[in-house]
Amino acid sequence: MELPIILAIITLVACLVLSVPIGVSIGSCVAVAIIFGDLPVEFLIQKMFSSLDSFPLLAVPFFILAGEIMQKGSMAQALLNISRCLVGHITGGMAHVSILTCMFYGALSGSSPATVAAVGGIMIPAMKEDGYPEDFATAVNTSAGCLGVMIPPSVPLIIYGTTANVSVGDLFIAGIIPGVFVGILLMFVSWYLAKKRNYNNVIERASCRDTFNAFNEAKYALLVPLIVLGGIYGGITTPTEAGAIAAIYAFFVECFILKTLTFKRIIEIFKSAVLTNASIFVVVATATAFGQLLMIYSVPDLLVEALSGLVSNKILFLFVVLIFLLVMGTFMDALANILILTPLLQPLLLAAGVDMTHFGIIMIVACAMGFLTPPVGVNLFVGCGISGMSIERLSWAIMPFLGIMVIGLLMLTYIPAISLMLL
Image (cartoon, rainbow, N blue to C red; front, side):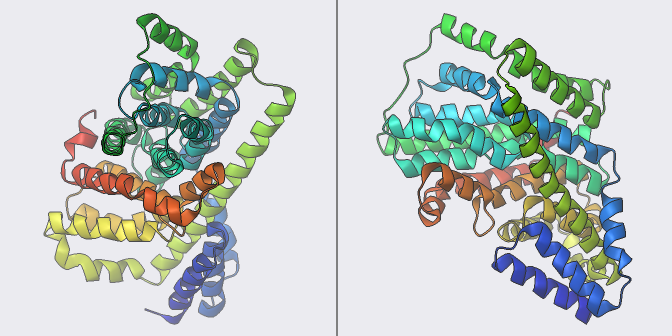
């Protein structure tokens, strides 16, 4: 491996250890490689610009905006009421309400930290008030927030689709069952812990009338995934067009039908959406440039050569890839992992006979677990910010949920039908 790429990797690792924002970290390592590799200065700017010139990528700001509108409006609360009616009476009822609400909200948001903030902001204080321990309440909501990127529409799925040249629509359809499957696993762990630790704080079983009223109240929110997935799967819209329709629909409903948005709140929505999109696109742009840098210095060829002996054994190869993804997820943001690792692994995956749509689901679930592991675990920081507990205490409390997600990831990896049965 040549000196410029070695220095670039050292720079990236050093920046990540120092908690430098991921976009700045990747951009810095590319700049170091340009300086020591005698590459044209225009390289970084050209690659950053061209990486954003993508029609499918345009879906990201629309889905982010739609999620912000529904979070600041009343749709998230309406979904919470449905969850209370459906699962609140089960042992560990409030935990199940949190997880099911995150599953609903994941179909609206597409962002894991946003899901933790929206649902956890309501449910963590409510669970503590209802007698649940602080660490359990925070761990449930923090881990369930990962469903925000697993259940479509999902920003990481869009990024993966554009990077691997895989249909975003197929990825959205393939992500439905795995997202629900992981959600059920999290509910099982919550039920087991609640039963073992005698958390008997259950909500009274809702009547049929209450359940009907809750669904009626949330009808506008429940239409969003139907509009998005129905339009894509029916061949009526592209994912980008579906995102635009979702944003317009959410704004119209919240502003003119439910009348929950004031002018001040609308300004806050657009400000938050702009900041979120800016941080995402900085990562996309710099990571694409870094990926091109790796290609210039033949890093993919070195990786292929190192792992070529495993390609013939698909089971062992996928296991090694999973370990690699989980380790990288502890150091790098999910989007950066997708943008950098997908081009490196794709030739090997194709040689091993792995379906790239199936691998997309594997990668998104693995990267979602990175939201729960320090030092880059964004969900942990959001959860700690809501509850006020320490990152060390939350990291320990979240271990049972992380463990069941590992089991779920292995099942999704070695049983492709879970992901591909709807295609």
